[in-house]
Length: 472
Image (cartoon, rainbow, N blue to C red; front, side, top):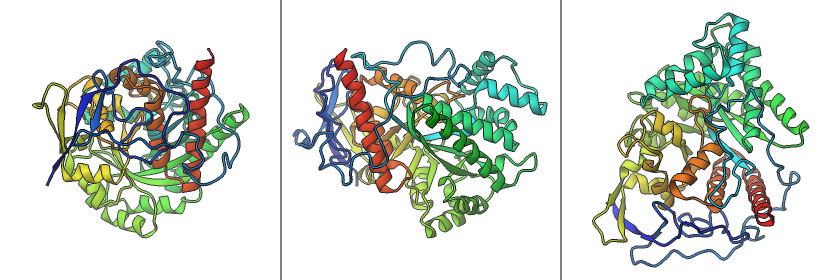
């Protein structure tokens, strides 16, 4: 039976700012946002327990030694600022309008970031598409890079996931050769680094790249070669990044076992996880049960697209049938949350259903992609503006929310831009953005010691940016 768990009350002023060194450790209190208690929706609000008592704040400081085991920086120094974006990157006039900053002037671009839900075939540079298309004789809807970028954004901004996915016919067409896959993957890593990403997971479906004679293993090898080339280029520029592949099976193309076996063959050669993608409605995870059973027997990490184009049953299938460790999007989990606005003037009661409570209490990460969710109509039942997105509701209620791009090209976006949009909509500050990145670090398909190292790098990178702002 669902239970009312709390209420929102106005508590946090718009101009609340981060106090350097005041943050709390990741994971110490799943419902608490570092430095402030709970969220800042619509002018600053906060969840309290049913009896009205605020949740306790852990006393540990952000850099306290009692937060995690292990030495500081076991693999080197803290991260440097990100590589500058190249002129031919996926950034367009939409993403370059103004420098991304918080209300207090803190820049977002230099902050270290983690990218968990980022499609390789959704993140090509327009100029790369033009050049690869020319090499293999493919006609494009536009011949100029900026015009092509606008075409992708316009086509994707349809409110329909089905129409949104049609734009991939163009991108996958130029990713059918070893050279094409290698170049796209290399560019992708460079663009992640330019966005401040220090750890990224890139997902893609090898079975969609066999039209010109490559085998499944050859496609994965080609992408890995490109990733490694990109990592080397970032390293030579004096920066750092780590990137792993998530291999996706198309959920409408069979039981996916061949792709699951492919992922397992490459688990020590760059592949860190398995996913299913494609049309969600009508193609539940149970149709790929042989794949998930195999992966579970081999203890291989799984994330599943669920709660984007379909509702709670899809999410339930991802958790029960696929044994997913993360939910790809998962935004429609908010359908299992009842918001009662009939309380007194400063209180809104919220009730979690059993599925929502299960996901929250077990800190199952949500790979939320705000701009993409707007474009595909995933949040249409709540509204058609970013302010209507359930992101802040989920965040305030203690869900493990992460911020992602989904498809950088189609949404004309970066993680920096997504963080800017969320900060503008919900008045988030630096501590909020830190929480999102620490959530993503904890959710990464990495060994625990690497996740701890990643969290250390993120925290120190945020401190460096905050100290720079304070010094100014």
